[in-house]
Length: 336
Image (cartoon, rainbow, N blue to C red):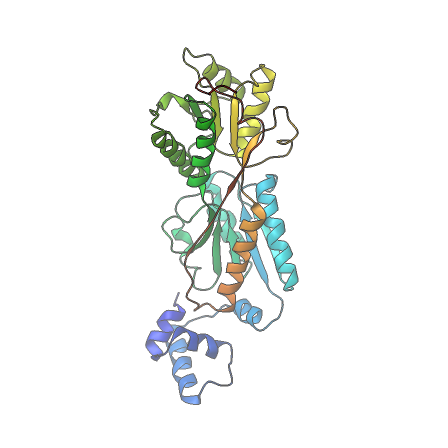
């Protein structure tokens, strides 16, 4: 599949000029138009017709692919994209790709075959080379998780700094044995937050204990088995850092059920009821609306001007919502 860049090179013009010819800009000279059209014919370049109609102000469609629409975090991102698209008269096609990385490619390609002009993707896989054949025809923006083996726009959160702030808060409140809990290692955001957790321990001069890094589903365990096992050890943690809200939703009810609400907790990601539990749960505020807004704005800019020089990576800051669960004092806490 020929690219706009190849057409520009053969015609001896810029990619922006090719775009103007494709969009029938009447201010292009006859000579330049002829060279570009000859290059298009020779290379059999096929412009995306929906991208052209989008730039001319007529209705078109974009796609959104997320792991799970039932997840409030992903659902909030979708709602934000839909709202922004509605303001431009753009239809949004949404699909759920599941958390199994092998299911991502067929689900996304089925969406791309609907002739969308842009795609917002929250990926589950780590190899996105399958998207290379589409990248010149469709604007693609990754959200929350960066692409693997593909140069593409991505809008992510500062996972590492959010994890550091979480662990720093627990250390400041006297905790020295802090566990890192997650369902599995599969998702890149979990691994980045694990890096932040380790960096915070190192910054506080605390040793890393690999036995306190628990990926319970990787071990074939549910949280209601893994958590009591962890707390029943000879030297158990006095605090836990949950790598995401899904983990927190697993872990916090177990702590209530076994009467261990004395354990300090921080969740990376807020969740429903977090502020009404007792103790209320301290959480990193991910602000999915901001992620969705930044992603769809970047996508529209790419569609409007494919030749625009834009940085590939947008990193959004996160903040810690301090509630009761992180303020439970640890063994090293000073006098009140």
